[in-house]
Length: 226
Image (cartoon, rainbow, N blue to C red; front, side, top):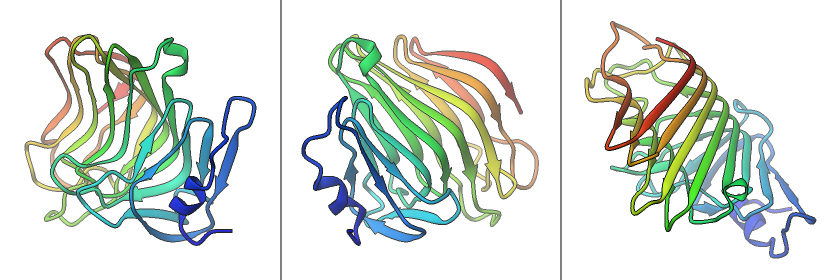
């Protein structure tokens, strides 16, 4: 047993497709340094309500994902510094079938950005976010996020993100900032694949931008409402 999630994860040195690991995290609040999740490793909390992981440095990511890694059943918060992201995944890996990471049953507290998928090298990577909740504050002086979800790429690389069953908590997006962006796709081929996504505000009328797509990015919107 470990008292720190990062210590448990860094103790794993032989994970592979035939030797996978699951790190189980008990209920509680965990203040963590950036955790790099190795390939073929799952970090599993008790639930998105009872297991809360917060960064010790607001300018850093909480989880840096690797190919075929997963986080599940927890709340993630505290990456509030400019351009910081709670979950970050970037990969140059080919073939494409291996360049994927997963975030499932996650509740995002307040972060500058909840999740980023950034292509690198000539890779075509995807971050799959399923059963995700966002929001978390009803005080108008606090923002739920600046850019909720983001995909990017350059030099032929492509970042993509699947948003599947994304809903709000505590009423939805908080804050009075008209510049808030729920999802941003920037870069040729960079794409959001949306299957069930509900955009709501905690109070007041709709403001800000739902999906912003430019510089060759795209949106495949299958089932979204606002």
